[in-house]
Image 1 (cartoon, rainbow, N blue to C red):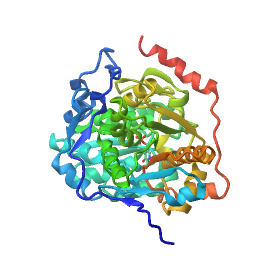
Image 2 (tube, helix red, strand yellow):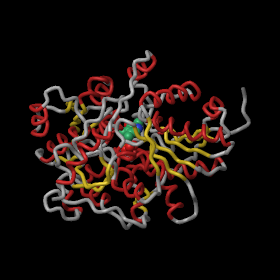
Image 3 (cartoon, protein in one colour):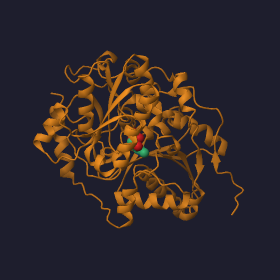
Image 4 (cartoon, rainbow, N blue to C red):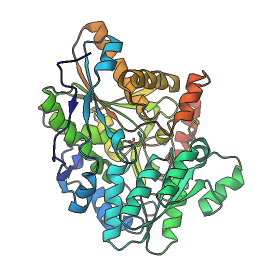
Length: 456
Ligand SMILES: *Cc1c(COP(=O)(O)O)cnc(C)c1O
């Protein structure tokens, strides 16, 4: 079957020269992160013990709209960017929808997800500062994988704390990180104070991103010439991910359309911000009316059911206090297969944008996410990451509304990664054994009520 319509849009040699810093455009600036000891607004120097200086400066930069991408990073971006923008004709047909559905395919990166877009600059800025060792955490293993490759590319030694449940559910992701030369430890572990404390209290604790972050920060602080790196949540991570949206903007132009709705799955907000922020600048400027939808798992619903509060980014309370939508840093999310979305809080920028009504959020149940992933796989030939399935489910829901109303909306979603190392999750779904998790209001209220003590 031959189609006249073009379906694949790929600009040549047009990798952006700058990242887009939405903080400079925001009318209501995000509240400042606070020093955990003094409770005073954070200065970049406060972050220098943990992060490379350049990354700390980017984190708190609310004035420069455009931040130059170093040549060394652009060179490595060229190994896989631009990524394709694809019109999902197969999916449209299966849904019998008048909507036009496009996806930006970040799954084609060497490591299989968008995470590498920030791993490369983070490794670059550490190396540039003379750092030799870095630590990080990983949930499903996507960030750890990206960081392992990026560390190797810039000659850094990397130690990864991998959430224990994922370490056991996704053994190949561990193999991949080790193949790139990283050291991988399941978290919680006995190698840190934070890990020992939690294991003593609950020897069977399956781990969470919050705990793994505590362990990685602790190791970085106790190791000479070592910094910590984080794959989501922070503003500098979303900044790096704006290459996705900046490219997509040009590609939509090639397609001759403009998105009415932009969707990303949501863990801490980096791939959602990456595809959304460059388009959102036109909404802030009053030129466009695009809707932005973050799709989070129903079992970890910080945007749809969390509270806007100052909270820690990690379990042990080592990070600055961050103004964010949160379920509380002690929240232990259910063991869903979208490990990259099992995080208790949302980034500072997206939290403010949600508060200001510039974006929306929906929650997707686990089985619905896999229903969507399977339909996408069968119609487009790509097996999506369990995380990405949430974006696909939200896109399908919007397309179905168009089927009902006859509206021809243009929907763009980010395919944040492929699921080829997550096939055990698909096996469970296909066998009919996948479950939804119910989260009661009491479960949520319990952790959030403790947050009030933090600022006192
Ligand atoms: C980590 C990850 C996510 C979630 O993280 P964000 O920072 O919210 O983007 C989503 N999709 C994939 C494939 C991931 O690896």
